[in-house]
Image (cartoon, rainbow, N blue to C red; front, side, top):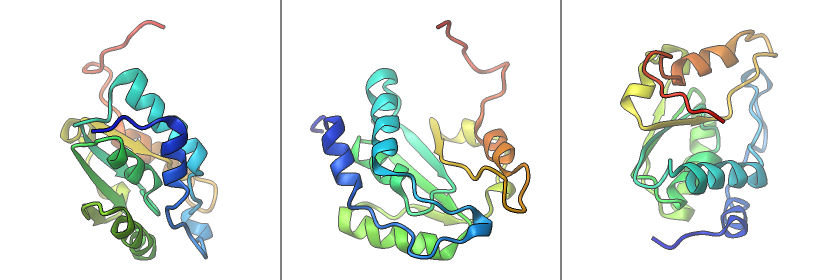
Length: 156
């Protein structure tokens, strides 16, 4: 696979369709291409944690992080979102990028805490829990994190 430069990844992500009418209660906001590219590029090039990995994108929305992960060579990327409209936007983007459609419409709160055991990596841009869904950010984090006893902690 051709190694993408940061600017190339960002340029490609600028083509991803985003919300025309975001749903405020779901805290829908697009992850900006620049932020997504920088985040994914760092994960990929510094930690070697995308290429050939199985990745879950929780609350994928329009799919910015999923599409970027696929472009960086993810082995499998499964997208999870509660909103059918967001998944429809995502579906139109993956056709443009010629990616496989691995998405699940579900409430992330209903997923087990073992996502980190099922997938190599979990990525997300979670809701902050400010619009009548207090604590939603913590639910997303609990779903995605390894238990401390199984997580290898590196010194900085």
